Length: 358
Image 1 (cartoon, rainbow, N blue to C red):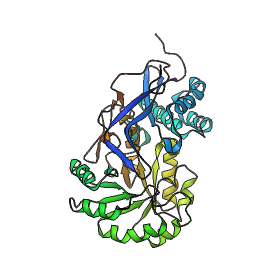
Image 2 (tube, rainbow, N blue to C red; image 1 turned 180 degrees about the horizontal axis):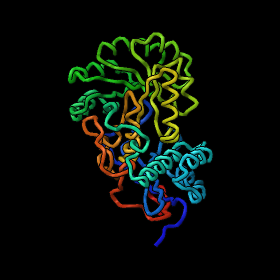
Image 3 (cartoon, helix red, strand yellow; image 1 turned 45 degrees about the horizontal axis):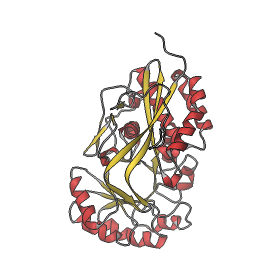
Image 4 (cartoon, rainbow, N blue to C red; image 1 turned 30 degrees about the vertical axis):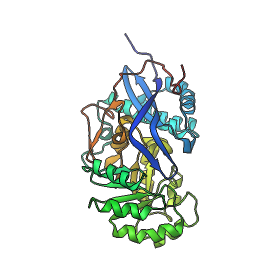
């Protein structure tokens, strides 16, 4: 029996329950909806992921509608022409980076599987090198944040979410319980004056760098970069490829999120652009499953820092693949990103529906 020509598309919705309610400066989540894409060619499947996100207006309905826009494109495509297919994908979904990311991941996974190689090796990278991941401590009461730290005692680095009236007290208390490095992420929750004032005390407390202290476009960011006692990294200020050059005079480094930039292909271009501008490079995750984390892990040899704890924050996962154990990525034997859905492959042509619909 021969397979149909072109690349088949299926997608589905899953819910990801978290171990703890996860809170940052702009909201909390206990269960994360996620959108899984499966692409198929020659009987081989590839997988990608994008989670919903109210801050960026990303719902399952929107993600699924955008995926349907590229069904005809994929049906006429081949992994043998992957660069061309990715270029066409980027043009068609220029206004939908989250869906573009899920399809981009899946296509990369599929192409490497068809070649019989792990994705990093298929790119010519040595996946035995790369930084350790931090573990994220979401905002909560100080006693609960201390408990979260104790429960993740095997991790080598901690990212502490800040943006409260008690930020310095939080870091001081957590420092009493570990000597491992800290990073802090204000998620746009500070003013320039507060960022500068806190930076010296945070440096003394063993913090490595500050992530996104001010909202994107805040004119005080250049002054923060100049006067901060710690390096500052862009996150919300560096969503897409065009943002990298704008970050050069305002930040010491960038944190790339695959869903915000549109996937692995644009992320690799952003990494190259950042290197040319002397910026340090981090890649971060959302609260997501092993599907997305396994794709992100392929970039490790290119990075200075990484935040890939998304699946470690879950009470239950939906896939196997790359595991992050005590901050280190453990790669599976299989080709591509190594992802396999626990429920098995999606039915051909299936379409995601919002939770609660039939």
